[in-house]
Length: 497
Ligand code: C2E
Ligand code: CA
Ligand code: CA
Image (tube, rainbow, N blue to C red; front, side, top):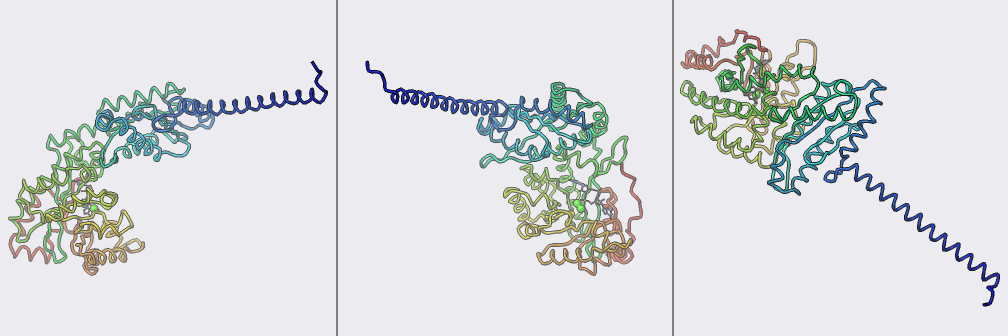
């Protein structure tokens, strides 16, 4: 065999080298690919498949890392365990694809309610865990939990279907409730289970101290549930007057005569009633009772009187609210034009087409629609034109500062602008919280239509309101009443808790 020439030998060595290099580079490429695949698998191992959020393993890692850091900086860390209530129903009704879509919406809402350093993890199914970093105390954690609870309650859209959900949230904090990640996770979960046992749609804290703090609230909640059954709720009626002194009607205001605490103010129990959804049966009772009374009182008045009923956001969006209003009117025989429904700006602003359509139907029947606390909410006024509104109630903060006694700026310009705006749109203007003669005179000068406030009458029990009506039933009495306003209520109501 001929020996390969030197150049031939060099060539074959060269080719061999190339071959090896090529093989080596392919190996490198393969390695890079494997590494990136490994990273992807690792990511997937740390990610929840449905939502793409961190999963439990990822969460536990982050929590374990956060603890020594917060220990060093003396910070508090909180773990929240969120479990949706009766989520199985969503899967049953809308299939797993629908259920997954809702889970993604829930995850997005929870994420929105958190700060940048916080972690939201999806544990699979309808369970979530949240790590709150650098918080002040357990009360702050409970407040965040409350905010999340509320955001979960807002309705969800699934295609053309709207559905609502609630959640149970367990809260615990480091270092009080546990020194390591597994203990904290377990304690947050056990607090969540307690929230479920208590009916769901609520928060429970693992910490004993906070449980003691919330005990008062929970006791109040238990007794509020009983209040309606035990007939402890009562409606007071606060008269409203036309500018010429004629009685226009009354606003129905709820009172709770607690057997041991005395009168509890609506400022304290209405938010609780909303949180616990008790406002639905309570609000319906107010509506029926107020319509019933006002239907009866019409006979005592020469002119039709209007009863104004406060409507809570939860009632308004409950789906069958309009039907319940119609029922209350039918049952009581009250003329729909004698019922005014008080809503707030925020309630009518963010509402979908359906809620506004029900409002329009009620308006078409003749019911009046008032915007309560006007001026304290949205600055956009465009909605006023689009909605079937009849009345604006100027918030009492503007009335109080109409004739300031402490040198602060007068709200006269604002009140004047609101009255002009309202009249331009054909609305009636009611000023609430009128306490002084000066305020009344100024409002008269500015062209306000109706007045409500302590100057003219405190909210009073039905019996007293009826007595007032009777005392005004003769022309003589009405004239006397209008000229010297002997009705000015000098009785100070009992202090409310
Ligand atoms: P609101 O609808 O703005 O009711 C007016 C509040 O101002 C009433 O407080 C009334 O007593 C008070 N007020 C009336 N005139 C004057 C005044 O001249 N000066 C001052 N400083 N205050 C005056 P109240 O009865 O404590 O009710 C507080 C809030 O509770 C109401 O505010 C309303 O938002 C809510 N609320 C009351 N009853 C019901 C109800 O049946 N359903 C719902 N959803 N909310 C209700
Ligand atoms: Ca009101
Ligand atoms: Ca008001």
